Image (spheres, one colour):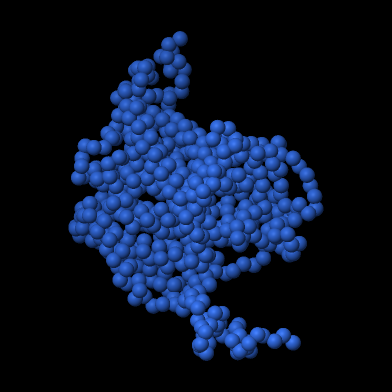
Length: 131
Length: 451
């Protein structure tokens, strides 16, 4: 059974094939319905749907700042999780209950702990309140 | 001309080495599985319509073909024959590429799933192994065997947000815009607990290789039994990531019409729809390989050894593996559909509260528990960590400082909307600024006189 390390970067070739197939599938779908579908223009048809009312103004207005704040918080956690993966693999391969293992646990505990403090701060600040 | 004559004209890297055989197998697996999943999506829509019909005591689609089985083909043809319309004021380029941006990540995310165990090429039928010179080589029945392993899932799952956000923004419709914002907020929120639940499994298995994760479950026990809390968190996040009910806030038709695909028509709309089913099927595949032991049929391999399918074998055994895996995926997809037609939809603030104030603290707590168990070397006692986390949540949760409950439930009976017969007590208005009901006369004093 070949392990990923033996194959090298060429092991991504099936993913490249899948990507090309997915892109072709999406493109063919769009082109096919553009070719076979009817094409009728009208003034009313071009308006945005607003439940039958005449639409007013642009849809691209300013929106709630909570989405920004939440996206920032998401970034903090997402980057942190990605950092945790290499740690998880090497930590699990260490000798259990050894000093080195304890050191690994303490370091990552500090790393996650800082984010948990930030998380509690954000919680008390009301970042997660949507009402 | 014999095969030896052909092979001498091929470039030098086309050689029956294990790595080359693995890549060719991976490409074949991807070619087959892509078409299987596409068919699965088409008939998944059919299954969902039939299931909902059974649950609501209807018949469901039964006109096109025998028992309505040709309905997905008719639907697909009809999507192609419909007009592809771009509303005025839409950003034409983004409007066109948004469906492809959601379709491509949905389609490529299953690449690393091992659909079966290891295949011994010597056991190929018709003496193929001897003809091709691949005797003694074993390959995995997986699409791509890459060293990033499970991180690939996280990387690709995040990409789906672009299609949703851009599709909503490009439409220049307020419903689409709000739907796109909601959907992207939801997808990024639920990605964090999903990543941590996945991390708990990786930590317990000590590897990112999906194949090894499955084999650990075959020799030990399924992660559903070892890490039930992680399984629950992962399944819930899987539903939320694919925008399925009860988390289909983005397309809540009672408030947002169609959400981010309000303005889409024909095949572009169909691609949003297909992507949802693709997400559901790949999510189910990942759930079954992470928590249900992939192609394993014995949940407790450590207690009852020798009752499982062998991990390595002939092509027939490989197909049996794929069949077991497909059965698990089918059950999980059907379960997600049953959930959709059973549970009511969340409200947006409840959805965000569940992710940020419920599942993220729970998953971080679980991560701490699992790390301590790994430190102690108790990989087979991982369920203790899950139960301990549940106990901590049960005990500590109610002790946390409460924020003012914004959606206080006021009992209807006894409130000012439905006062008791002899009571003179008026309940306090919910919002003293907005509601000043001192001016409203008491209805029990007689009919309201209108001047």
